[in-house]
Image (cartoon, rainbow, N blue to C red; front, side, top):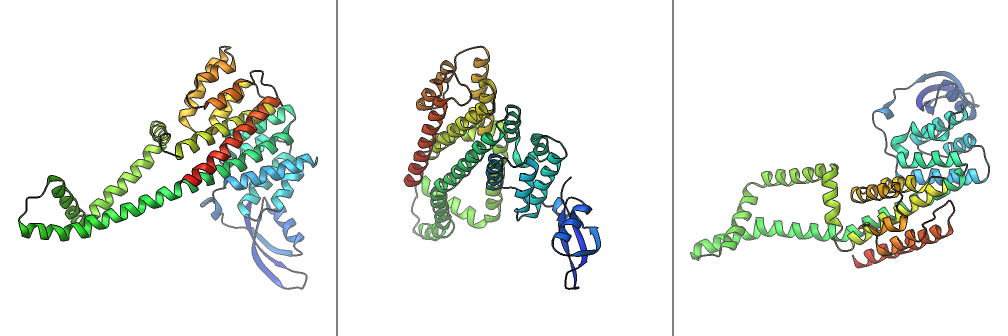
Length: 369
């Protein structure tokens, strides 16, 4: 059951009347919540569910925090439903608290954790749920949730690195564009009047600049609509598979940004691959899941070719040599662990080395920007 809002009228221990709204999965849960607060309900009814109309998106940090707390509770051998319920009790956001209570209620009713999480797939994602499902099957849920929490933390850190790396060029580009617009719309027209009075034959490039400045000044609303349409079109193009591949291909050649993009993609691929292997998946399933987890269409296309080669029985080291996305260091570290099994020390060492390279690459990108 999902959480809902209930309006209540109650009496507190001092005999005073209280009114308010409380979040609960059902009426019985609402009565328990009010009793726990020392209130005696007089009236209780379901409130209009405005949260269903506007839902606050769940951030990556919240999913990482839930996973980290769940890993600690599982390590302490606390029952799964009880652990999730305790996490929900400490959640400040009503929507997230209701979501976690719903998961706990389903687990307590006998559902598998993955089935309970699948009801909120828009929050946790397919890769997260598939990894938890594999961990449940092999009995390594505590270890895998710990790895997942660490991966999500690194993913959040990488996202912040991207934002910091892009901040400087975005600010510089904005200032340059603003300066160009001011020159074209206000400075160039003043010089145009001077040139016309002197009857001087101007070069073609000067005439073109004058025409652009005059056009922008007289038809600035049309120009703004054109720019807005171009921005909307760029976002629409990005949302298509072909457009995103093209844009990411161009981003690969941008200084600092391209190197950081490769480092983060490779690091995420290797982290998810390690988690998949520790969860009991074979190499084929691990490569497929890790590639989809990167979210990079170019790398996913390349990984599909790798997947087909592995399915034909080709050695992992040979398959990795044909990769154009993975750098040489990553191919060597992953390819040397050709007998990949759960808990392989060589794979863990390779992952740590790749993480170190990702961190250093991110620091170089930030300092270079």
